Length: 226
Length: 230
Image (cartoon, helix red, strand yellow):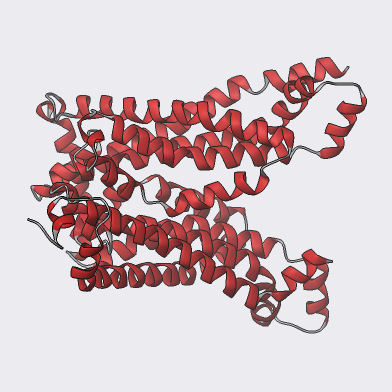
């Protein structure tokens, strides 16, 4: 009872003893959280760019694409993961697929907004210089849409970090895996530590992506300063 | 997946026995509507006055915009879990309601603030030049013009609250999520699909009702604005 392990026995909210004795468990959960989030956002970006390009081909495509990505967002995460379970079985693919689908709502909109914001005279000039559609997309439109895309990636990443916890329902929720059983056993230190780590993870990701955004698009800051 | 699972979900929903009792659809639906409705009302009562007031004053912009970014980083599941290992766990639906209020306030506040700030500054200046007081300016110019954006924010918050209330089931709180977790624990896929369909339908219904309410309410405002101007 007495001595160093007392905060674990007393079930305190703050317990350094917990952090040191379960550091391996905490590291594993954090790493799972990071890779599930990272893989989901990367796939989300890879899927959203073609979808946004498709939606730009005309109203016939824009309506269904936007309606579908909005509809996906109304499906509760708990239901989404449960529904994907029979498709993929008990694997991280369930959580990653769900998170990719959610990220599309934000990413498709932002890519479209970014592409729409490319000035017509710039495109006209590129066309006059003999740029074909593909070269125009790759060298003119996508670079100019980059600020909006990166802003979308930041928002999507932060929400994905938070949503990953719900993956605990299929045992692939990163830090959520530590929260779920700790609620059942009323283990305060574990719930608090995992929750704080989760919020920290989101904030670190946000700051890191802000730095990437500044590095990749230095002109947006210069324009603001002028 | 496919027809078999959807058919199974339909059979599950068609079975009257699944609708009655404490873990039946009617009771879970009532819990879900009560919890999300109360949370949304409380969140609006807090967020809209503050957001609109800050927007009117043109102050606290950084706070109003950043609060939704911070809010997005906090997982509802973690907040619920924290409440459930605190003395709040014995307080009925309080943990879910408070968690949902904390979830809904940031986007509502940001939307109200941005909505009010997006109002054309030249219109505001003109109204000031006509001698309108701060209160008149707010009621007759800023609020009617900000109305569409504020309502859009309210709609998306409502849909998100209804969808997110399902997470309460992960910590043993009530609501339609319990149908999903109960089906999940007994490997009853049709029940899981039925639960998911019910929540999605409820979210769409809420969206539809709010769109209709917006159409009924908002035309009055521009009309009153027009008559006052002429």
